[in-house]
Image 1 (cartoon, rainbow, N blue to C red):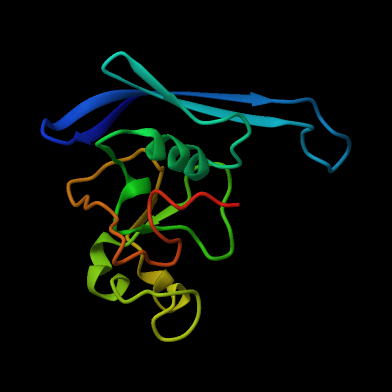
Image 2 (cartoon, one colour):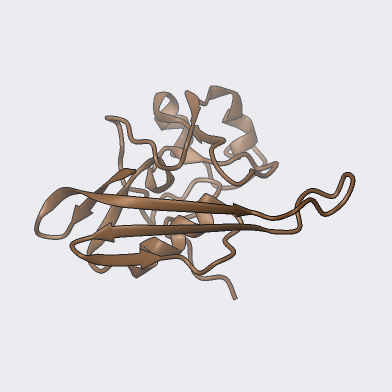
Length: 158
C-alpha cells in the first residue's frame, strides 16, 4: 500500500508499505492460534526497511521500521499527534482513536486517570482509524506531547 513519508530536504513523498501476516494452526479449543507473525516492509528509493519477525501489533512493527528510517518520518495516523489507543489495550491493528475534533482537550492528556487522563476524554474521540490512514489534519507526534501512548517512534523496550 502507498504510505506518505516526509523526507528531510525533499518534502512529502510516497513510499510503499508491504505487510504480511502469517497465521499459525489452531492451538486447541479456546486457545487461539499457535503463531501469529506480522512483517512490515517499507520500500523507499530502492531500500527496504523491515521489522524483525514477531511484532505483536502494527504499532510495534511500524515503530521499529520508523526507527530505521534516516531523515524520513512516516505520515500516517500511527505517527499523528491526535491518535491514541484505548488504555484497555488494543489488538493487532486498527482501533486507533483519532482526537482531531478534540485537539485542545487531547493536548492535556498526560496519562490514564484523573482530569487530564485519556479516560476523561475517551468519549470525545472523532473516530477509530487504522494505523496507516492519513487525514488532512495530520501533525507529527512530537516529543513534547505524547498523549497516553507516548512518542512515535517509541523508545526501544529492554
